[in-house]
Image (spheres, rainbow, N blue to C red):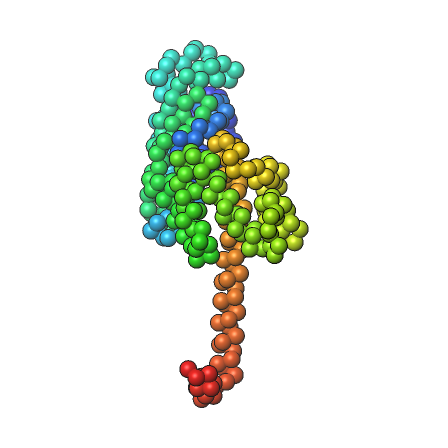
Length: 295
Ligand SMILES: [Zn+2]
């Protein structure tokens, strides 16, 4: 097919991964920078897969879409000509100048690979930035549904976790971050015997001597996480909080996942022990055991 643009870079994995990351993780209205050379590549993306929470399946699923038509209708040379004359002999060196003041609006529909449920996304590309300007189901509602599994583990702070996601989706960085910090403080406090009068960052470092709190895959931003958690709450600024929000949220959900797994394991062990005891006791004696316990 003669769809390809002249300057397309045929290794599209980076571009696809970028769009998937924006759809999956970025909150609405955040302006995310990218390389303007990619405008010429987007036309060649035919398929996209992302992970998203499926309301129908009630769990995270792969959502895919054949998006070649919509990409072609948004990012082809014909479209570039219609929004402003493509300069004759546009080269890879002057195309940044050409795209700097142009906007492109993209609607994507992706379907759950298991049940077919559709998720809708709208992206606005302007110059070297892209924003997610629409999403259904909404970013906050999808994120919050993924957090329901933690409800029983942090009953006291579950509402704050959901408020945090709502604040983040509205770009209120400080508010979003303060909720996360309170939850993390609670998780750290639970792991420490003598916590009175100690600063949060010192408690965190103390716990980290015996148990990993910041996962290995965040080692690149570990010092930034320490730095922001060392600050007094009044010292935060929105941009800094937004930048580190996802990393700190990941620290918290990793800890909660471990606690969730521990609870499930304990439950399995308890069930196995009970089954073995019942079998050893035999039907008749099992009844007597129950009587002996006064049940
Ligand atoms: Zn589904």
